[in-house]
Image 1 (spheres, rainbow, N blue to C red):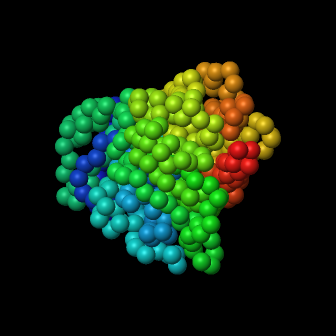
Image 2 (cartoon, rainbow, N blue to C red; image 1 turned 90 degrees about the vertical axis):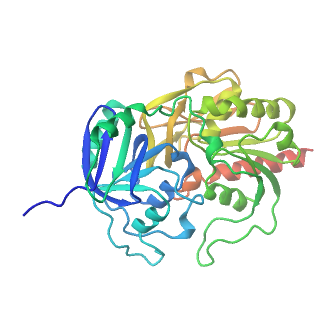
Image 3 (tube, rainbow, N blue to C red; image 1 turned 60 degrees about the horizontal axis):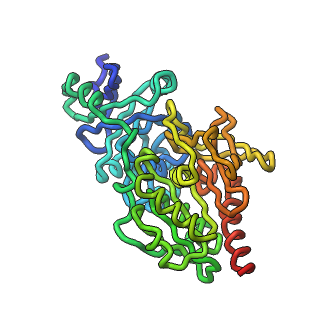
Length: 385
């Protein structure tokens, strides 16, 4: 019995080829390839702005089995360039499913490839580092392999690339939607206690929901906002969001803004992921590119101050160099996978950040205390005033 003709091809910059079966949009995409070890949440992953410039290999084979629905989008449209899976996505079986994964990807211009040996691909990423790749979906099964490989080799990579400007909001807006809870779903924050300005380097909606649930009246500003524009809102606290790309590139404009806020105010500051890296750079530390990064919903992180281990979600290809932390800045959390930095705080001020995503709740509530800590810091400051 003859095998069906492959309708998609994944080409690595070193010339390695993977053939499979395309779904979603047709056409070609070029990006960095990473792998994600989460067993659930493929829709949240594809719509996480931190995945800009990347194609995601899902190590868990059952992708598409719960469909997609509007409530689970982390931003308006998928941001990851494409997805690589072991099996062709099946029909969904879930009461929340509003649509199948395949037409959702096609309508939103994202390429998928199934039938791939994702274990082999994941091993290659771990051993060689996150490769530059080109992926093409052509229903006719005709591919210009030489051109695919050349495009993969021509990809500039994420080092030196500022992607926060690409995914940030175009203008400021208010946010009051709280976390999803049974049986009412998403509700609104009716009586906020704290006024927070959130800098959007690629903010996930569920982060904003967690801030609202912690009693915050949230105003979101674009990544390029100045300290003057931030402080014009008279905030009780500053939040630095997650986001994609090289933190040093985004730091060209974000770090001076953060430093001015730290130098001229005593406001509590809380950062997540890219926001964590921005804060570290502003305090005088360095960031470095990782071999293949951390991407998944099963990463153990140890709180060095309490000894508690949290199961966290992560999505980052750069990390803060803990050896570069200056005096007055303490390392608070580390990865139990590789010992890399996962959290910092200033010794004498309510300024802190974490590398992981507490809003993603894989624990499921292991890390929500960070939002409560931020709220408590704002309460303490207002009571002391």
